[in-house]
Length: 211
Image (cartoon, rainbow, N blue to C red):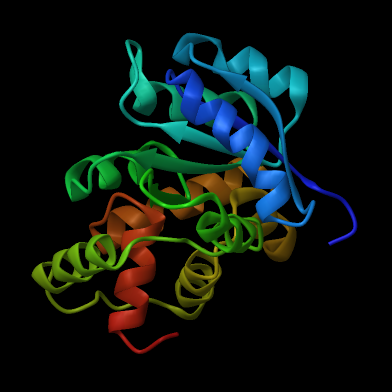
């Protein structure tokens, strides 16, 4: 990787944010650099517009408006940025809510700095990164949904792109449509599959043997 990954940290615990700021460049051999931090969930929109990070780490347990609102604000302000939710507990419901708000990944805050470098780089490569327990919860939910619905060839192609981590912009380029159309097609497919997140759709694709 020729340039360091620009990371913003949204966390109201200064020691945690400062620790990542100091440790991530060292743990990643210079591949990751924290370019901005904030403890104010209401300020994240301006932060990402001003600093243009590649990836944003968001603590889910923040004072109002909270981590989930922060994720939604980041997604509106910078649609292409990758978002990783973090939490001190392993509540799957909260993690799923973060995915539904727009995060691509979830990591526990108990992880050491050197242990999160590769997951962060994987997120930038388009992978959804989830702890084993959360992945099991997603798969269990997929099983509860019953057999996968019948999809036509275009819908299967779209589902494979979603499962591979493609965002709306990449989908739009590959399908030769506008970003708005890609967003509409994705939302329609999620409704047809009766899921709320891309990660749940990917779980269904895996269960159906498509991956």
